Image 1 (tube, rainbow, N blue to C red):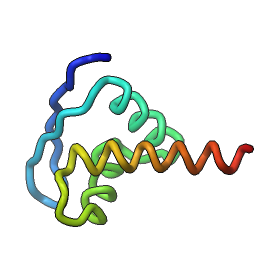
Image 2: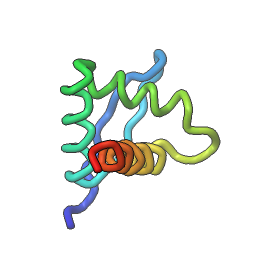
Image 3: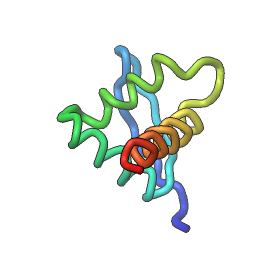
Length: 75
């Protein structure tokens, strides 16, 4: 497994950064491409619904749930 990679974004007018493993960055890029939105916008949507937890954790959980739902629909 890769070490986390830190990237910075502007979300809702403020600068933030998150650290994710390469597999999660790749998954986010794939979803963003499918939805034709920038990765920062996708992260902004996740940020808006995450509650009190950290953003990096919220992104990881969102990616897991997203692909679980895709798998459920295709089975």
